[in-house]
Amino acid sequence: MDGITGIYSPGDSDLVQKVFLATGSLQHRGKTSAGIAIGTGKGIKLFKDTGSLADVIDPEMVRVFQELDPFAAIGNVGYTKSHLPDKRNSEPIVIQPRGSSPFQLALTMGGRVLAVDELKERLEKKYIFQTENRTELVGALLHDCIEKEGISFEAGRILIDTLHGRGTFALTALVYDGRQSYLLAINDDRAFEPFCFGRIDGAFIISSESISHRRLGGFIEREYRGAEMTICGEGGVEMKRLREETPLPDVFQGIYFGNVASIFQGKEIFQLRRELGLSLAQLYRGTEADVVVPNPDSGRGVSYGIAEGLGLPLAHGLVKQS
Image (tube, rainbow, N blue to C red; front, side, top):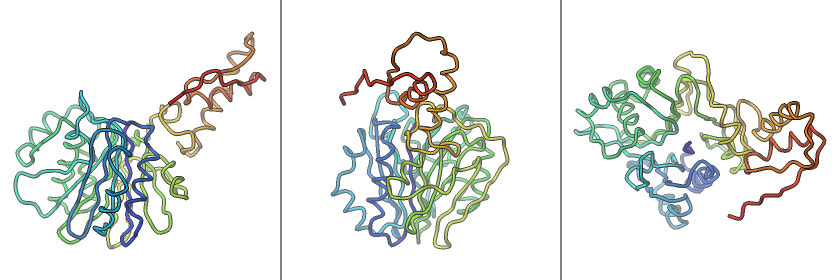
């Protein structure tokens, strides 16, 4: 349910402000924790904590991060993926190898990965796990793949194949190789988690929902297919699909989780909900109702469809005060 973002835009004087706005537009996906990480020519810097994004990142922090001349940035809003919210389990997370490594990696992830005890036992020989968050485990696996294959599509392929059948994920990651910072994005082979990308004024923007692109004055190019990886670096933006599986997108994004202005499976979520309401109206043709009242806000689109299909007025009888 987390909202995750990633932006690659070297030399952009508004990069950190952009990732702040893009991530903030996903605040409906959770308010337990938030954070932003930036990749520069000298490494990765991160700030995170519990609370909403506006509680965690203030204008002064945006200014300080921007003065570090970032190449790329990633952001997270959502939940700490632990029983009690705490800063340690907040995201993004920086991966800690036990020994020296030419790569520094920070990531954030939406999704849920299961049946990983054997994988964690293997990775604990090379990595120090500081959290209860499965995102850290996936990050350690990605770091291990990069150490073996470099920053490459083959590293992503190994990650996807290893996690096949273990759950769902969509992630953005910053990788620093001692000279420059890269932005990576990968999703699971069934494309269960919402994930999309687009270019706005030269910036390559990745997000859980297209509302982030609208917030920045643009639109997405498309949603990610399953097992698709993006590598953003000095050579430009490269994308490749690494495994072919039948997509199985999370329909609840359209029914409940997603912002009404976001695109899901090629259609605006409000229209998806309206069409669902029109279909439901067929079940209530004999109703004696006088009015249709939406509740909660996520039910508004469905209510519009029901009212339209039944020819009834729609009244806002329940109003959220905060």
